[in-house]
Structure formats: structure tokens, C-alpha cells
Length: 419
Image 1 (tube, rainbow, N blue to C red):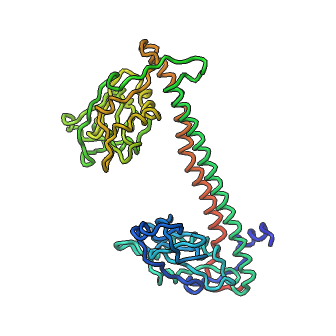
Image 2 (image 1 turned 120 degrees about the vertical axis):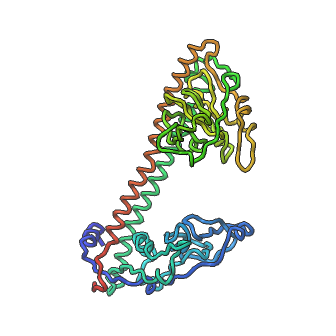
């Protein structure tokens, strides 16, 4: 079958279809009960498909083979379509959708159809309490079968549709892998230059910098923040930085805040001054705790009591970049309290060393710090462009795939038609 001719005819509606309830062409049933303890007690090689798109874990037994289509029956991802090849364990929160007659219907064609029909499947779900999808409702979902009076021609059409859509799926996956690899390569390059500029030399191997390593408490001093909560937030008032926002909203530096607290709280707050470093003293991981952002705003900013400000005479962005180096993280490790929540105190932070160029010449030192910052800012901007552009590029390709999928799988609504 000529692909171009086929596609033109199909999009022109030349092929008629029969809309058939899913329950007439496929068996729908739940998997077996499973939980995390069962998986933990019986680790193995077989993925466990249950209420999510990704495996719940891996177990040493399987209950499903060559029955790849699954639909989530409960929870936040209710109605999601999964494809799992080979042997695996299907849980009780995952419906199998098994073709009754493979001479009438292609399993991969049905998979693409169900992805296309996600809005209709979602409409069958109930959301009173725990979201749920009832099998009896799913069986009534109508699916289009082209040329129902000619099974051979019908399968040929289904196969051609699958070929086109699988090609787009493969291209999308390859592009995503290439973009991720490109981003990682640039990230490694950025890290290399950051480490080289901050802890080694000025980039010219024949010309060494005069660098001295100084403990932070030899350079400046720390100011601990004071508590405020989300109920204190307002749309306009005193700019503030909550320690959690340092992880989620800020990079190396910022000149504005995403949050504000009421103006009448001023006397109960502690502030960072322009040029201070604001440091998170609490984090979920050892790597996270101690993340810093340079405050470059023109006014003082309130800081949370699970953070502190570091006041110093250095270039603020230079110090912030120092907090990102491998040397800083390696030294920080010994000072982090490893409870359920990871913590580092300002007194411990004060013991960590950072490299200062030309320490005996403050003016020359600031010039060198500014030069290093300018170079790292360029790399930082490039990384941000790539990081922002990667999801956008991937999303554009997904939209392209969805467009062609919808074009190929949108048939005229009719109760029945003859090929």
C-alpha cells in the first residue's frame, strides 16, 4: 500500500469505519493484589505495573506475558494508558485490555487509539472520593474499526497507521535522548570551567593566580533569620525569602523576591542586606542543604529562621558560585547533621573554606572576582537557556506526534459503515 496515497485517502475520510464497544473486541480485567511490602520481601527482575505509569517496583514472579496494554483503575493517574512488553506482574489497580480476535484488531493500533481517546476515558471516571474507572463503563467505550467487512484490508490500514505513529514515537524518543545528552555535556563543561576558575587558575595554564583559602568566618559573619509562615504572606509588603524557595525559585542570585510578608511585621523579622548571601540551613538531602543565593536587590529582605545571611566584603555572586563547587560540598559533608531533615548551622558553615584571589590586594581581588563571575554568568545563562529550551523542544515534538495521531485516528462518527 502506497503510504502517501493511503494517508491522503485516510485523512480525506475515504475509509469507512464501524464504531464498536471496547467490550465486544477486548477482554478487560484487573490484575492481582500487590503492595510495596510484597515487593520488598520478594525482590526480582519482573516489573510491577499498578496505579502509575512507571513500575511500582520489581518482583521475583510474573502473572502477565505478551499482554501489553494496561489502564490505571484508581488514584491520581486514573485512566492512564500503559504499554509493557514481555513478562511482568500486573497489580489489582491496573486493567488489562486483551484483544479477543487478533485477525480483526491490532493490539498496537488499539494502544494508539486509547491514547487518542484519553479525554473520553477520563470522562468515564468518577471523582467522588478516590478517583476510579469502572470496567463496565470502560467496556462501553466505542472505538473505530476501519473496513469492518474486510478484515484483511482493515488490518492493513491499522498496520499502516501503527507504522506512522510508531515512527513518530521513535523519533520523539531519539530526539529526547539527544537533547538530554547535549544538556548533560554542556552541564559537565560548565562544571569544569566553574571548578577551574574558582579553585585552580584563571584559565591560562601558563599564568597561575595567587589564591588563598579562607574560612567563611574569617571573611564575614552570619545572621540567622527569624520565623514567618505562609499565613504571613501578602501580595505586597516586605520582600522575604523562605528557605524552601532557595531550592525551588532561585538560582545563583536574585534582585527580587517571589514572596512578601505584612509590613507591620518589620520589628519581628531579621533581614539580609544587599550583597549578602542567603543560605538555606535545612534540606531534604546533604547535597541540598547549604544552597545559597546572592541577594542583589536594592533594599533589605526578610529571611526565614531556617536560613541565614552571610555578610562579607566580596563580590556576592562570586561567593554564591563558590558554594556550588565540588570542594565546598566535600568540606560541607562533615558538618551536616543527618537526621530525618538535614541541617547545617551557621557556626559550621563558618568553618568551610573558599578560595580568594589576590587576598593581599582587595581592589585587585574584586576585579578578578568580577571577571570570574562574568565568565560563569555566561555559562549559567547558556545552561538556563538549554534547560528551559529542552522541555519546550520535547513538548513541540510531542504536540507534532499528537497532531498526526489525532489526524490518523479521527474517523467520522457513524453507528456502522460498509467498506
